[in-house]
Amino acid sequence: MDKKDLLDLIDDDDLGLLDIEKKTVSVTPDDRLSESFMEINEFFSLHNIEPKSGGDIHEHKLASRLKHIRENKEQRDFLSKYDTHGLLKIENKDIDTVNDIFEDDDLDLLSIEDSSVFNIKNVPEIKQDRSDPDFVAQRKICADFDQYEHLFAQVQRDLKNGTKNLATFVENEMKQGDFFVLSGVLIYLEKIYDPYRGNSQKINRRTRCIYENGTESSVLLRSLGKRLSDVGYAIKDNVNVVSVEDGDSETGYIYVLKSLSNNPRIASTKNLFKIGFSTTSVEERIKNAQQDPTYLMSPVSIVATYRCFNMNPQRFERLVHRFFGDSCLDIEITDNNGKNYNPKEWFIAPIRVIGNVIELIIKGEIVNYFYDKNAESIIKISNP
Image (cartoon, rainbow, N blue to C red):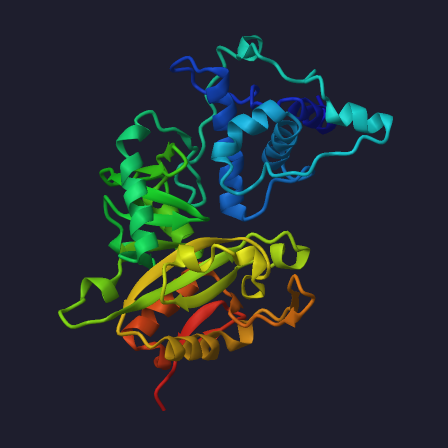
């Protein structure tokens, strides 16, 4: 069988039925579908791009699987709760040609309910080299997620009321019971297992990580740390709240927002966030965001809030603008009355950097640093 025939066969394997794996317990079609989609999620988390056809065999397989899922409304609806990266949010396809009819497959002619016919037996299990630092453990449904759901709910409440916030991720401080955010998904580090030495002779540990979307994985501790260092951050107690003393005055909330605008320029701008200060609750402040040019005339989502005491709002805004001045979004927004505005509180910077900057502002240390927008890094000012 040549490569073209193999790729064609993979294209029809939208549920990963041709994957070879050791049979341990029977799984339902829903389990198989969800786990096959988790593999696509893992690819996006690792590469920050969806799999494309024409790459290597593995990427081509994931691209074909994603294509078939997108074309099947029932599968899209079922998987929506696992769609952490918005991979299934697609526009309806117009049918203009005969080719479009074949590609759209409205009758689900390619879907197979009974996958037993494709179960491959008596074939040796293909083992992946676990010593590979880029190895990504496959996620699966967390059977006892009900035991952890309340923990995620509490962390979300703490983030909203400002008692916890985003903090710099430090790899050697990882411990059981910690919470992290990776690619927009909240993670609970439930277990760190005993260390072992892999084929590379490096000491590593397997973990049990629970994800807020109801899945879990046994990702290697080193791999998790590497990914968090790149695109994640830790959830920590807000030191500005924990250290509150008698006589301190609550002044409001620092907030970080993400735009939900459909404007192509805004939607395509990576790492675009609004940083602001509110003396009222953030929920109250943003309730009419779609009518306010300050919020780009569109709904927004709350990424983080920081409850503040003894904070001067004007000084905070000056510090933010001075620090991120070169990374401010330059855009003109027209309100419902036809008047033009140039919002100045939207900045282009990774969320982990923004979290670190807010920490430095709260601690009064921000004057010792500057932002390198090309390196997307906070740089400490050297003493002469």
